[in-house]
Image (cartoon, rainbow, N blue to C red):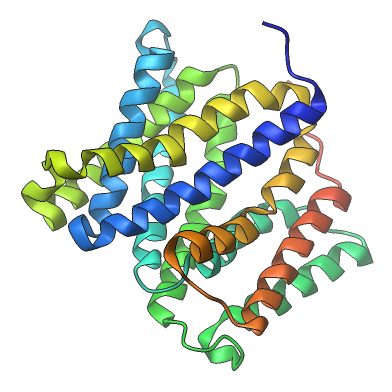
Amino acid sequence: MRPPTPIVSVLLVALGMVFTQTGASFAKMLFPLVGPFGATALRLTLGALALMLVFRPWRHQLDGKQKRAVLLYGVVMGAMNLFFYAALEHIPLGIAVALEFTGPLAVALVGARKPLDFAWIALALVGFVSLLPWGGFAGDISPVGVALALSAGACWAGYIIFGQRAGTGGGAHIAALGVATAALIALPFGIVTAGPLLFDPAILPLGLAVALCSSAIPYALDMIALPQIPARLFGILMSGQPALAAISGLVILGETLSMPQIAGMAAIIVASIGATATITRPAPPTA
């Protein structure tokens, strides 16, 4: 099979992002049935089963250092999903993703030195403040939802850091192990809050749709596309996640945002794109 061209790779990444936010909307539809923790457990457990069957990680040996990195990677992934889905119970999808995006944005801002770099930081702060309920502009946004989304963002930053460590010298099987670990973290919360409903065959199709859209399909598309595009371009593309989340929330869930909220999201997106494109990262240490 010939590798995709850069243009096709960009389209595959964008398609994966659409699937991710569609899956989040589907997950919110599960909340009346199993709650946010139940939806999290279904997504990660079914997604882990799909990835384990496809990538068969048991065929690979890990050393002690990589096992610890995979464990941390999976733990922060599980916590990130639990916090994020809990936030969706209180605030719209677009707002939750924009606030959660402060995590990877903080990672992108590491290494800021130039005046332009600090302009991106200032722009991100303006967008962030406009989304907060005490900022005077965000309207009826639950402080609980804000706190949960920011907690998910902190876990997303850890997910990036530990994911890089776990993936060094690894491959797709690392992601399968990470998702499986995250599922083990989330599953007890789902069982406690949802009980027997979590295993109701009637909700399995929607749960499977959430798992495929949010985990299996986007990851498979990224695996095909990433070797053909620069990491910085990938980061710029990912900056569009809050906008896609807002569109998905509007089309699937009927969630509407005010103009100040849209402006705040736009500021965070522009700051993320600018930081990704212009901030020079520190060189990795040599062996």
